[in-house]
Image 1 (cartoon, helix red, strand yellow):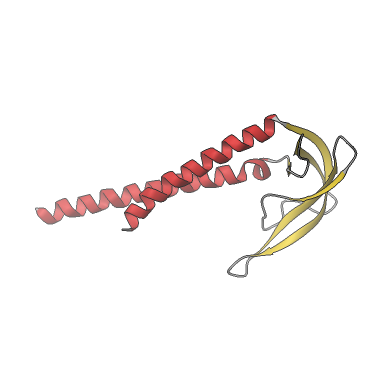
Image 2 (cartoon, helix red, strand yellow; image 1 turned 120 degrees about the vertical axis):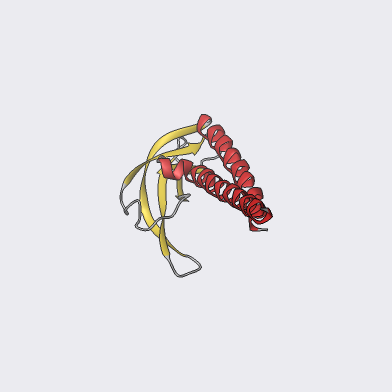
Length: 140
């Protein structure tokens, strides 16, 4: 049962990762770069009480309008500090769609789902092989 679940979840994660990669590429092709700064770190408490910090950053778009956006990936320890200057990428037609220009903030979701897809698929396949080996061993 677990094996089948893993063998289904692995490809689903791979599809999610692929879609995330495609959407990120589209975003990057239609985006504008500017400078901004980290204005605060928003604390996020997980289910088990773990605390992570989400960067909140400010930037001014090409029209001179100011924006304050939350980052896309929280971490512990914090990846940024308040007042830190950051490179920002934002959607040309939608400045509210902005990200800090780092690998983790831009590609973190895609990488996370790709790694999870690989690990879950390998575990599912290993369980499948183990069950088949046990079945053959039992028949002898």
